[in-house]
Amino acid sequence: MNRYTVVYKSIIASIIVFVLFAFTGNLINTNKNITKKEIVSGLKSNIDTKVEMVYNALQANQFELPKEECFVEALKGFYSLKERGIVKSNVLTLVDFSLSSNAKRLWIIDLSSNIVLFQTLVAHGRNTGEEFANNFSNTPESFKSSLGFYVTGEVYNGKHGISLKLDGLEKGLNDNARNRAVVLHGADYVSESFIKDHKRLGRSQGCPAVPVACVSEIITMIKGQSCLYIYHPSINNSKQNKLVS
Image (cartoon, rainbow, N blue to C red):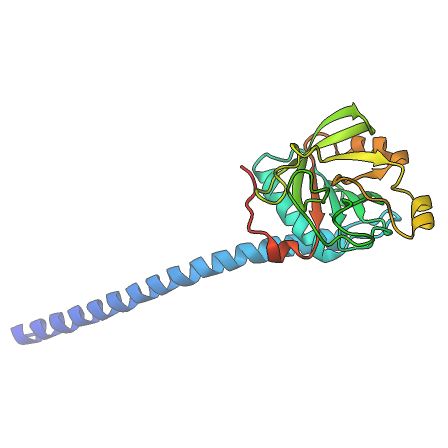
């Protein structure tokens, strides 16, 4: 092999190495970009899949199941709050204010066993609507309900008897709950007999009021920093809020 042949082969080898390096570099960069997208997509897909699986595995326990749309929103928020340590309990309370007040639109769900523990009537605020809830507020003295995520606070005895304080977790949406004295309590206007006499459930001053007959049982189930979510379809269109840190 003469000197020119060696030089020629060296040049060819260098060109091949250069081309392969450049091509591989492009592949690496491309793969990195694809991987990032795949990771984000995968994370979204994983949480959506998990939520769907939980919903499909829910045991009604002789109750009706909540609508999937509101359950999905509630469960995603629950996971976030649980991960941050804001919520301690695995019990989720879901209120669906898209339903008639004459319907049992409050559910208590044990996410450890995927069982619906309870379902009952729940009132909305007097200025939130008649039979249906459609106006919401975070303003004191508005006598309107506030949507969004809450964490349950202290149990106490007040003018409505045994009651449960609530802390709103969404800025601008419900974070005035404690200042407004929005609590879970029992009320005699939350009953089937009231519906029969007035064609709709009674209304509160903004509190999620429940039947007197079961308020103690409900509070026992959901006390201890559990998650309560009040849903309405308008929440996704109107709120520009953030969960309180």
